[in-house]
Length: 121
Image (cartoon, rainbow, N blue to C red):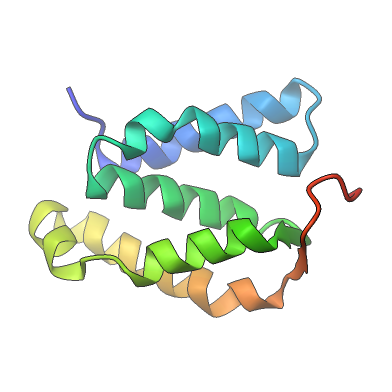
């Protein structure tokens, strides 16, 4: 059984919090959570977009973001097949996706970008 859009958002956030509670810093916890969801992203475009929305939402809580992570996030969200998502998501899921996508893309450039993952928070 495949997870729904909202389930992926919920589980991604819960797993992120679990990693933070394991004493990882926020950036490490976010990177680890994204790695853990590689198989989910490989299921299909809806799952991939849900993971990137959850990732982007949490990334916006950070002060710094890796240049490579920012580029991957922005490219993924900009190159999405909107019509395909509209057909496969419920109206509520699709509206949520559009709002979150716009919010992430509108705010991602406010971050300090770094090119070294070992820079202290």
